[in-house]
Image 1 (cartoon, rainbow, N blue to C red):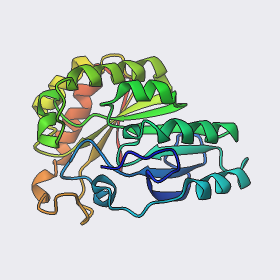
Image 2 (cartoon, one colour; image 1 turned 45 degrees about the vertical axis):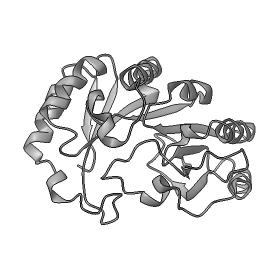
Image 3 (cartoon, rainbow, N blue to C red; image 1 turned 180 degrees about the horizontal axis):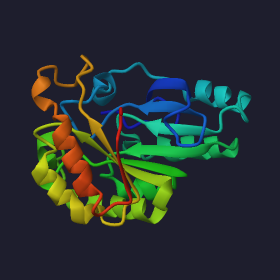
Image 4 (cartoon, helix red, strand yellow; image 1 turned 60 degrees about the vertical axis):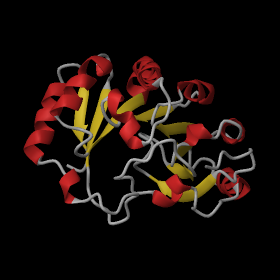
Length: 236
């Protein structure tokens, strides 16, 4: 699994212009190679497996520098950006030097790196009940503690952060939602993302059985609204 060494070799994808990935900000989106989870429904298998072609950071830097004022932010996505403990601080520092705001997309399993990155906006993907992260490839013993530390950051950042939940069976259902309620108490923004088969999944056998009906998703939303300020179903 590639970790990167500060020269941008950790990068494996790039969306040059985005109006939707960084709230209130025109951004460019960088995709990092490698991940510490193996969610079967992931639609970026080349990034997760580390097989995506490397992208030189200098190319990204030059692009952002020339477009200052038109592009104001950079989204660090993946894969999992926080794996790259050497490269990530270098990339963030250089982007901030040219006035870019930073949004971080993360699974929240490495909260110390989130703190070090100090993003202007944080998007945290909560996958399932903490007791089930082993089914998604997590090999550590401190899953719940790490997730709760990251959620504390989300709560501290208030409206500059969000929690995203991909609604895919068997990982998210009524039992998982009930487990999430005390964890999410005090979070401002939650987004439910219904699983849709893009045809390019990490596990090609993960198909229609992962989909959740609209009635269930609405029930999940109503339950979450008992503890969070806003809960939106993406794609509506």
